[in-house]
Image (cartoon, rainbow, N blue to C red; front, side, top):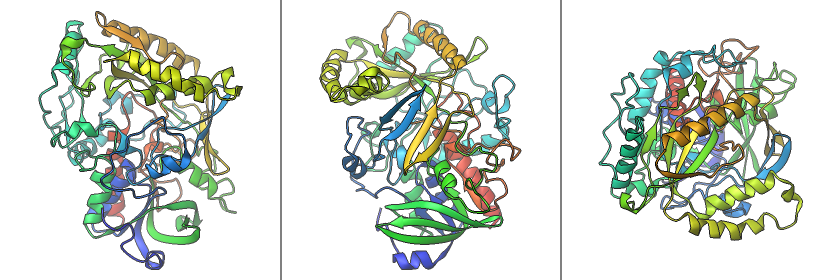
Length: 525
């Protein structure tokens, strides 16, 4: 990747940049690359460390030491989560380093359905719904598909063109067998849309950092190509603490690097710290003009927090399937909108059941129960997790992503510098969850399966909605261009912009919106 600071820090702080991009995940990396390639000077500001390009670190849920997590590029501190009235500390599956969480993802970038953006009458929208249509977003979906080198099969149930999608390599025998069994049950499986260049053993990068840049993520598809233009600089280990504005513009970015307080300035500010951190920065940016934070005149910053509910289950395809590793490429959308209910897609997770996943699951259950008050209860999960990992054997892990809806009382805030969130699972979500699980069982009839999630489990790696776009300042934080209402030069390109969570993972929509926003910014240079 080269030097983190290609200019002396004093020169960086003295320079007035065309754009400062706060965060280097998919939203920040993609926007920053587009801006740099358009000829703008870009400063990436990343809270985490640069790391070594040769790392192959995975998103290990069994690491609980903050220092060890920071070294590996994981979010170091536990978040404070009050879920259904129960308060707990937990390590969320979030990244803190160049590329953010995306360097650990399974590289599945799925396009939402047209009705996700176009239809709003069938679910509540405090923000008024998406302020732009699927047709308006489709060119940006295509551009993001090409930029992230997506391979996969077209969804057999879709009539939407997807010409930028490249054909996948031949399916593993095990995946081919699973797909054939699903077709026999009347379903329409397809090869997932995956951001891999398909170099030798490229699929081994799923769920871990890729040392060869064959997995396309916020680092390899965003930050690194931006740096290669010579128009961008990367500043790591730099924690942005607040923004200051004068009238309709943000004039200063205040940050802390290595114990030193620094001030940065730019014509445009791109906020891409993630749906759990971007709102915290706006809330911290108080002044006489903004007594409760920038963009928060109507107490909307941080509200309408959404996650998907994960319906994780194990599938035993049998030894005849011939698997040599996890199932990586099977998905279907037959349950996306079923019986007039918004559910979601079902897909392979690209992983087998391991010790880290089981201990994380058990710790979550302990944290939500009365056992959390017993000393040593968390550590006691290690033994059953080790036993469970052996018992699961050759099980393949699948997940159903159940769409969440926006509720104002679900929100993220800051508590002494740590992420704090309040989240209550709505009764209607519980009802849809029961229906989703019934449909999943029927979809895999004739195959041995077992749900690994029993209590509702929010996907803490898919937060969204906390700075939602809309048409009116009274009901949304951002306008249709993802710019904070009333501020000319403050833009947002992470998942916090989403008015709804949709029924697919958020990565492709984040990338597409980041390209769209960068294009608008380029027109205003």
